[in-house]
Length: 310
Image 1 (cartoon, rainbow, N blue to C red):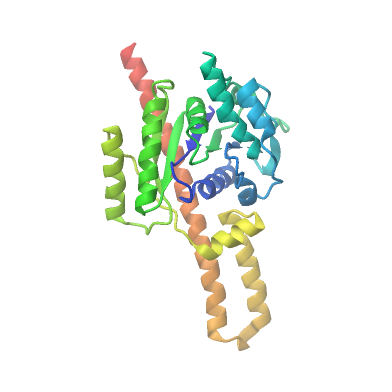
Image 2 (cartoon, helix red, strand yellow; image 1 turned 90 degrees about the vertical axis):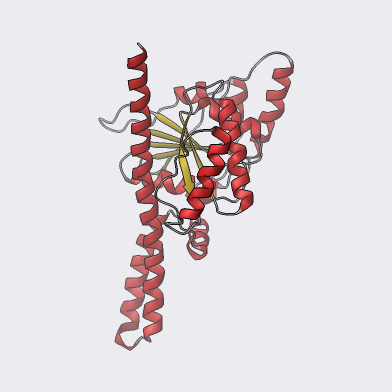
């Protein structure tokens, strides 16, 4: 069963696009068929996943005129992408103009309902997960995404501005539920925060509870931020687990060349670099498991509530 997940925050620079790419890659590596939709006009997802950037014109026309989505196939094994780009800036004015005439846009959901992965051999069916990266400062685009999504994940850093952005998107989430009552807050991901930071987790829960008046789900796994790894991944278009494999291979070759005469600090530096990448990859692997479990639990709970009501 397809599950559509929006990833959003009201502030930029909180790791939203990096999280989308890393989570998508890990889910695909784990066997899920994944579609990523980039609704951000800046289209930074293209750098993270290493595919050719476009202008977002097709996605813009799909939202405003109901055109079929064009999919970048095989970005990774079991991972496809609908690219974003600057043409998406045309969507908010179109939304406002239609609204002034009492009309609405087709939106994203009809286009998503029609798109399917390529069938290879006996493989048939739908995407298992659709992840939608959203722009932080454009409420109309976020609103349209929330109308098409089943779940919302909010990444946040520990600074006050990021928490303010969390509150903004939580308010948009609450408003979107009047149009899409099935939309569920799957959880908050702490990005670039030290693991086990109970004080930070408490601040996030308080901010959400004050906004939504409900228990605030925070994923147990946080994503560590490593500047060197972030630069390396984006420049190469690699994901955390792919960077780990590259570092392992590179370390093995260089240590072999250095042999026994290598200074201890040189060997230690190479091994430390690889260990850091492995830790980051492990974060994403653990988070992917938690996200899949949370989606299963939330949908199961909704089904049980429906059965009780009937």
